[in-house]
Image 1 (cartoon, rainbow, N blue to C red):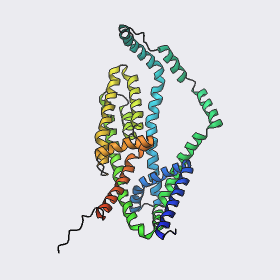
Image 2 (cartoon, rainbow, N blue to C red):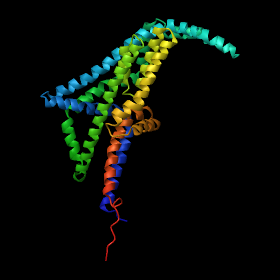
Image 3 (tube, helix red, strand yellow):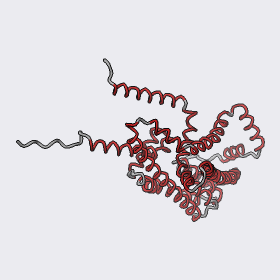
Length: 360
């Protein structure tokens, strides 16, 4: 049975899509840093374009934008690394004393219940002594030796860290020409609707990014002020880090919580101070999950607060951590597509009311 031109064209597009999917699946480890660079270039493109409109050469604007992002990442490292370097060695001395006090409370209550329960403080002390032994030079030598033997993973990570900003720079440099070439590849019959869909998607993603930045700023202020009010000495660096790190859902909050609890444990020497810090983070997580993100991010992209919560849960269940990270941007893109489908449905013969009966 011969195939008409429409069916042949559909089969060709299907074959091209399957071939592209197979290539992406085979080259996923190579394409991942390139996709991250593409995302970075997309985020920085409005800044570079704004600088170009003010007379700044595009190559210089791209350099300044990437330097700004690199400086922000370096600032985060400079915030978190000194905190860890200052607090970690104190654990060897402080945690065993805290556990002995905890044993003093636990053992009498357990004996009343007929239980012989106690924390092995000496075992914890030996573990901490092995982790923080003071032989950092030997540890570094062993680390370097292991890197020479099998450090391909670290080399790959460092290579990608250098590769991504370089690729993002060239993408920013050629962004207008790249967009024109991609538009020229779209079939003329599809060009107008696809470009219209992309403009709507670009606007929604821009709203998402602006809303996410607003959430990060508000949470950074909240955590810094709230931790300062409970008396934490490292309130400013830990609070700012936690607020900015919530861009990575759950992981950023979790790292900030661990750092804050560690600092509180070493500073306050009692459970009330630790409980106060934990309460600050519990309130912050509730406010961020059920009010800030649904209102400032979801409403900006047109998603109902319940839809935002459902999207985070569904993408996290289906794709894990990466799904949580991409849940809201992907939902924003899907929302634009659903609006287009709804418009087509309302104009279709399926939705149109039946014709009125003719009167003879």
